[in-house]
Amino acid sequence: MHIHTTKSDGTYSVRDVFEKAKKEGVEAIAITDHDTVGAVEEAESVCAEYGIEFIPGIELSAMHGSKEVHIVGLYMDRHDKDFRETLNYLQKKRMERNEKIVKKLKDNGVSVDYDELFEMTENINTAGRLHLARLLIKKKAVANIKEAFNKYLGEGKAAYVAKIKMTVPECVAMVRKNKGIPVLAHPSKLGADEMIETWAKQGLMGVEAFHPDHRFEDSEKFLKIAEKCDLLVSGGSDSHGGAKDYTDIGTVKLPYSYFEKIKKAAGKKV
Ligand SMILES: [Zn+2]
Ligand SMILES: [Zn+2]
Image 1 (cartoon, rainbow, N blue to C red):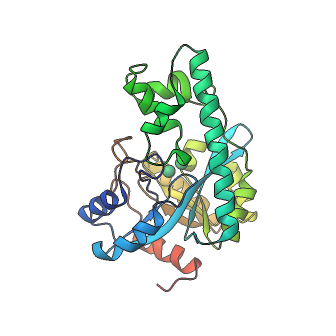
Image 2: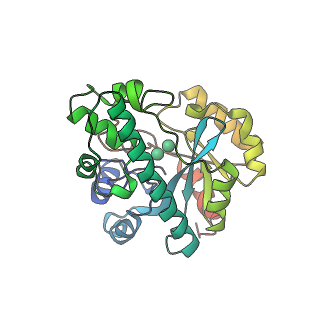
């Protein structure tokens, strides 16, 4: 219920995603690219071919204090006009951010051309830090993705630029307005457990209990929090293809019963 494609910062095409999911025996998948539903149309047209149920999704970023919070929206309606306008705005902001990062990299002695970033992505509107990290590797400025983030791109590092600041309630409201299901992504990475109850009261509908970054104890903890706050349980591999190799499709699966509850909440027949 959480997969990225080449339409954002994943390395799998839509077909690669379905091929891989089929091989792993996954029954349903959600594609949740950052700030774009660019992969949804193709996924909708090919899913039947693979016999896999497809959920149109998105991953949005909000800020909580200095922390970046990711909200996955499931069952998003890509035709909704307001939603499309907001996405266009977010993509514009994303490009401005990339320009700022490129400038900061230059200030730090790493010569990166904005045009080179174009070559790293299928969709420049959704280029982000992972693309920049790959570019830094290509230019031999760093050895790997981890070093790119630790040295330059990560929070508080030399070339870090914060993303635009939607608040969590704003982000949740945007998904709800579209009749989607807003889910708090990878909460262990965030470390703001105490906020989950508040966000739930503000409209958050689910939390990812299953994620490659979660140890068994983390999953147990978030399952408990979900129960306490009456939240749906979600999760998935958060696959970015081969870019982050410990999170390939099929590495983290969500029990089907949790998926059925999400589906029901979205008003779909189970
Ligand atoms: Zn995320
Ligand atoms: Zn993600």
